[in-house]
Amino acid sequence: MEPIIKVENLSKQFKNNLILNHVNANVNKGDVISLIGPSGAGKSTFLRCLNMLGKPTGGKVIFNGKNLMTSSQKELIHLRTHLGMVFQSFNLFDNKTVLDNITLAPMKVNHEDQAEAEKKAYQLLKMVGLANKAHVYPYSLSGGQAQRVAIVRALAMNPEVMLFDEPTSALDPEMVGDVLRVMQNLAKQGMTMIIVTHEMEFAKNVSNHIWFMDHGNIQEKSDPKQFFNHPKTKDAQTFLSKVL
Ligand SMILES: Nc1ncnc2c1ncn2[C@@H]1O[C@H](COP(=O)(O)OP(=O)(O)OP(=O)(O)O)[C@@H](O)[C@H]1O
Image (cartoon, rainbow, N blue to C red; front, side):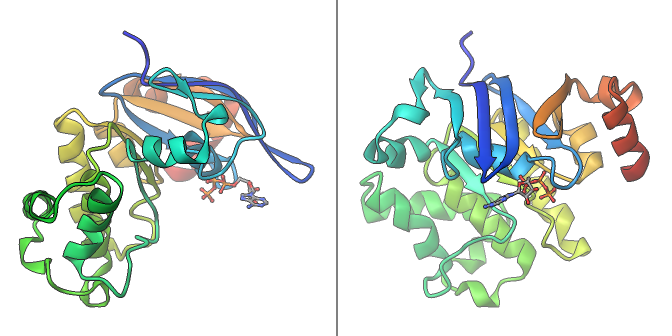
């Protein structure tokens, strides 16, 4: 089976700092990958390079056989709809209702008609326990609710891969479980996911691959059991001794 995403020698330089240093990785359909590592390792930068939100300075990202590095802006807008992204800070439109937040891109970019887009939005809101929030504005949502709406908004585009950038880091502790449960259900349904996270229990119990990143490279790719019980590199051992 061809990987959905192939990352080849990916580099990202900010001024004189090489933040990503020739990263290589493959993502297969159905993979649930937790990308973990110390602060400043390059995890968010890597994730943003996968969908070209941050333009890499070298290497390739091949998504379904297409090299995103050489894709035009127009192609990227289309290709990005297949790579849903959820940010730490929700990024909802404050002046639009929850329903409009969710249906905007499916109607504008995917040219769905309103009835079709709204039907799907209601189904997805129901799935995340927010069916009664369709007509409210984001300011009236808790952080946990806003993040579940952000997940629904990404799902409404029928993505093949979901990218999560520390989706629970900005939440009050009591909200974290609601969001992680939604993500766990997505994983169970077979969604291909890459999650930058500091939630080690989630990484251990839900993902089927751990990518440990430090100093701009993925230093270990393991299954969770092996990684948490027998980290191979000194950097991973040091990291785990601090976070566990
Ligand atoms: N736009 C930018 N300009 C300059 N340097 C940047 C920029 N974005 C990130 N960096 C630097 O790149 C490095 C990696 O940052 P990144 O946010 O990818 O790390 P991270 O592993 O996600 O960390 P954290 O867990 O704290 O979010 C850091 O040293 C950061 O200061």
